[in-house]
Length: 427
Ligand SMILES: Cc1ncc(COP(=O)(O)O)c(C=O)c1O
Image 1 (cartoon, helix red, strand yellow):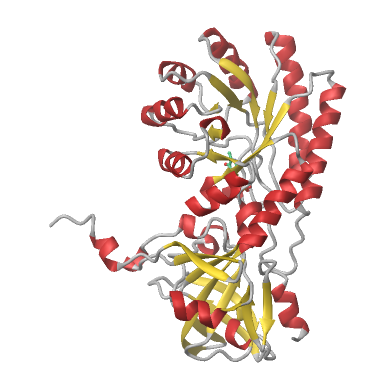
Image 2 (cartoon, rainbow, N blue to C red):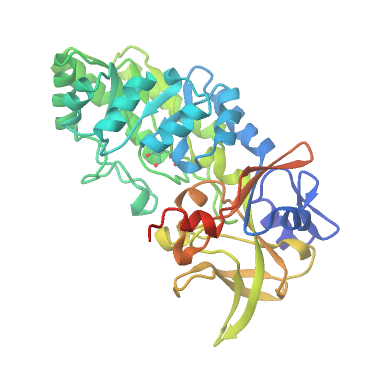
């Protein structure tokens, strides 16, 4: 294996190896996976999912840890995580249905959403959700009317996380949460309406590559909790710190390890709370990307390879329909030619999808051996916010997903068919 392959391999799940020049996961060669399940195929590694969960549990043994279902709604992942004591953070009726179907108990479900419908509020009440997170002034009365008992209040402190603007959530003018002034009113109104206002929620943003904004957010929360005590005679007994920790998509990204990130946040909380002489709160964490993102790669089949000016395009059998992150956030990815992973790079190639947009480019430039039709291209870091955000653009069915464990690859989501796409049509 050359240095290039070794570098790229470090972006793949823990069980990934190169055997006889071919990428394998948990001892299963990628050519076998492609042969058995077709491509594109999202390949999850159970060992990597479990080590991420255990890193959270070890760093925050006293916190309630919730998998943020939006990262990848999957019964298999939810069941695996629930078996490790995790709950679920959901933001729609559909995500709630996934959590309940996977057997996550209501007491380990927190319900979000910046525009919850009455149906969603009623479903949260019926599920006995641990908390509904109030996100708008008019949700106080609506939540009380729906029979919700316990709530958190999501606050927007005006902090700009160092991440793509589309996934910042706590800045001034954000569509999420309540300004401090609105939050004070909502807390008072909710208590007046008979709701148990247990605490506060803050989610700074996603794909955070350091803890700075989260630390600032926690300091802000401590001061705000003290204001709540002074103005309302109420202080939070629960603090939900949301999710946010990023993963390494390309080699030059260096996010903190889960344990370091979580410990830093909890220490900062401890410090801020003692500074303001507040009662130590229960804590909740809601990771999504850092649980599922690094645990999967997507396996594509190479089709057309063609030169256009100075660019050589390598077209794969998927694209923006199974992973729209490059178009949404200019997200960067790396790749390995899975069936020829031991070969030296021959140049830099542009990986494009099969969709009818010039912007359907997955990777601008990646060093690869000269790709040929029929090769397999593996793109790491696709376990979160890829399939979950996919579409059927160009009437392309979405890929299957498999979970590799114990030398076996189990289908956890079947490949969509063209018949699935035609099913809702009415003629
Ligand atoms: C309220 C809330 N909690 C948790 C998450 C999960 O964030 P991440 O996947 O970055 O950990 C999100 C993501 O947007 C969110 O909005």
